[in-house]
Image (cartoon, rainbow, N blue to C red; front, side):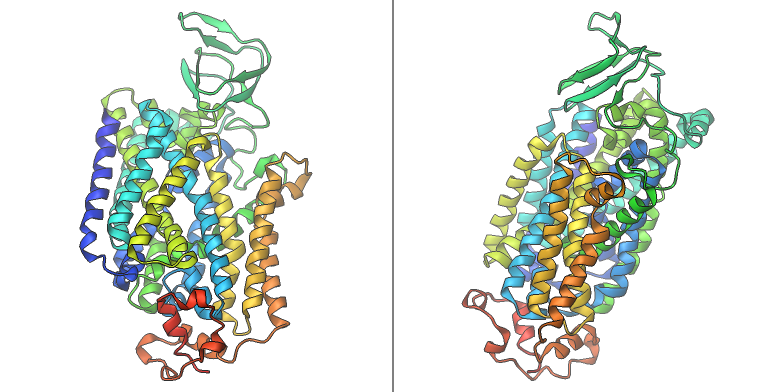
Amino acid sequence: MTVALAVAPVLLITLVIGLRGVAAMRTTSDFLVASRRVSPLLNSAAVSGEYLSAASFLGVAGLMVRDGVGALWYPVGFTAGYIAMLALVAAPMRRSGALTVPDFAEARLASPSLRRLAAVVVLVIGLLYLVPQFRTAGLVLSVVSGTPYWVGVTIAGAAVSATLALGGMRAATYVQAFQFALKLVLFIVPAVWLLAQVGPDVRGQALEPAEFTHFDSETRVTFRVGATLEVPEGVRVVTPGGETAPVPPGEWTVPAERTVVFAEGSRAPEPRDAAPPGAPGWERPLLDLDDTGHPLLATWAVLMATMLGTMGLPHVIMRFHTSPDGTAARRTAALTVVLLSVFYLFPGIYGALGRVLVPHLYLSGATDSAVVALPAQADAGAAGAVFTGLLTAGAFAAFLATSLGLLLVVAGAISHDLVPGGLRQLRVAVLGAAGVMVLLALPAVGLDASTLVSWGFTVAASTFCPLLVLGIWWSRLTAPGAVAGVTTGLLASCGAFLLSTTGLAVPGWLAILLVQPAPWTVPLAFATMVVVSLFGRPPPWATAAMLRLHLSEHRGFPFADRTFPARDLGHSSWSARRSSAVRRITRRLVR
């Protein structure tokens, strides 16, 4: 009941703000970029609310419980990406006049094919990023309230799609800004309460890692998906009749939806190919992906994926198009760095306490619910229930805020870039995309949400990061070069992911480059764009296109009275039917 009372206001406020956005919805620009009138402070709060997803609110602490202190490199990469965006992308992207990343691609290089390819990349990133949001919403709600997994997935999908369909980007902006403030409060206050509640003994244990080998008390573990455990001598469970029974040593397969109660003092089993929390190396400040023994390479791989991927995330890029001008976009990026830095001071607290109080979650693969499971372990009474409800409300705010932005760019890719349409078609695309994502999330309970999100960052780093950096800063980029580079990055990153899921035995550092391929897919995409472009010739108006991206709007554009002939733009009859703001801008560049 406490959880329902905490989550319901978040959902209600989200829908109410969506209703208020209906009056301002008249054009595609209103729907996608809120008419470009969002102030830097409001926009930075909305960007932060959108960016702090389940991977940040729950995932970082869960990864720390499972993998160790090195997981804190993830928020370093998340935040560093905005510094790179501030320096390289934010202001020029706003000056481009685009509504979406595919819009920018066609405006810069006059290639409808590149626009369609970029829209496909948006859909891939949206799939990899949205499914984990809905999946974690269902998992968290089931853990804290006992409801079926599908209930949380359906609630999240319905709330997000209704808000966007009603109010578009304007509603999303106010919802995300509100939810950022809510998440910040509901993350910091419980963290302070937990530190005070657990006492000096638990705080001391959190600072001195010890391997999880025994259950300190009778512990109930629910396996949402099946698991194979290695059972040593001394594992004992409590039967439904209340008696204690030993588990035979060896391999133990636990079926899905099975709840096992381990007796007090029982030895802890171990999942196959997984080290228990607090094992030797847990406190090492580097990541060791899949225990390959190359932590430095793994850390650099994650940093490259998260930092460069942030710079290429389409739902983050679209946020800068809502700024009034390039200067406001740059200020938005700077303020976002400050807001994110405050938030990321606290996941380490939850991760360190989670290793002491809820290490058993790693048995069922549910470490990403450690944050919401901690209050009940610290206080079994009313206070624990209240803080569990508050953290669940904050987690749902994280799911909803991020899903709003992702669903918006997916709908834009479908209804603005692939199959051009008006406002009504955008709303239909929102509802249809949400339905598909919910259906995909229902069987995804056994997937690792952090892995899927990491893949989304890697695809963005391998495709949009090279396209944006070279498109903004290199005048010799050509449309064939951009198409070749984006295609290479997309195929290389997705191919590596598919190979990593086949169970292919790859030794040492090669395994890292399959699980996290950013160290080679990003340079490969950059090199492909450069080499192919050097074999071609940029159009004569490329320099003018670059000037538009870098000259301040307030100084005026000296070539605004010159136009391209339609034949120079290479627009097909398909693209000529689109009433695109970018098309009008491009035609005003010099010949």
